[in-house]
Length: 231
Length: 174
Image (cartoon, rainbow over all chains, first blue to last red; front, side):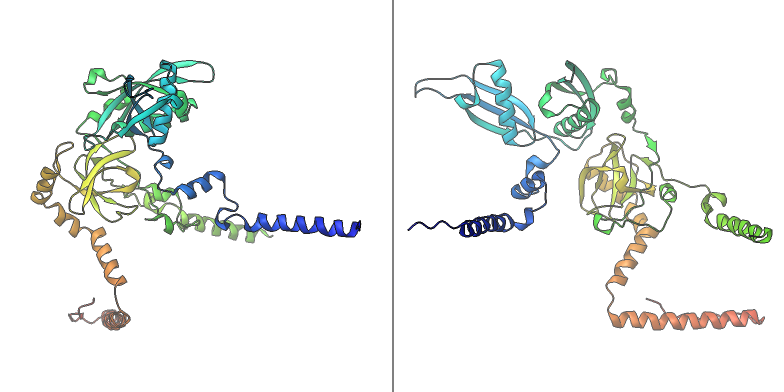
């Protein structure tokens, strides 16, 4: 018995199409619908995930090539890395190590990733950072002086500045050296010297805004220029 | 539109302009600012620590200051200038002093007392009080307010008729 009926085929196709549509609508979690991939990843990982904070941390990554057997000893390599989270630190570590030696991440093992926390974040310091970055036309060295309370804070600022001024992101920047600028003649940027004054005194603009983000409104009853006057 | 209407419109427009010009400038009052300096007591005007007071210990850069508020349990941190409202008083401290020395200085110089006597602080306390009133307390406050207003109206009438104002102590208003 050979049943060859076009009507049946049509119904069959219709049913398939219908079922695909149903899967499309109900298969995904409703919360993720219409959101960008970045937001979806953020939702999955949790908003408090380290890697989403713009802030860069300092890590010391130690690794070596996987030893072939028990008696084999391999040289350990330790590097100071600035990254957003330990995962990025490891990744950056291998990227740099691969250029310097013959060891690849797949052939190596990470022995430790330790975050270096700022010993004293209660005083303000000027950090001098020497770095190398790749621009669209070449590779350049740059020196930046940044005032901050911690080194990782200064480096975070540096990345933001570099991306804003030179359009380069984390991957194209390599930090060569960081140091603390202590004496006034060591300062290379005049702008930072003005903060060394203990008699510093200046007015600030009054910010007339709602005390919390949730009290923000779109329309306000006062003129904007009046809000800048501090009385 | 006749000439008279146009004239009336212009006059009205000028009146409106007068209404909406920057009164504070035209009154000739100079805006006295409290400059940000080391030791300046500031009120935080944004965020989780809204309403609390800190002392400026150092200036980090063009946008941030290093502050600490031991009385309000605010740990030493960097804070944006936008979040600070400088107050009238300055604590005499050196740049970046230790917490202990800061605490002593605040106590010795009576900074907390100055804060509590400030209008902003008093207003926040009153706001808090009013927010916590029960309906009966609000009714009671209303009754007293009306009573006070009645007395004030009475006094005004007596004065306008040329009589002497009688000194009557108003009931204590909450």
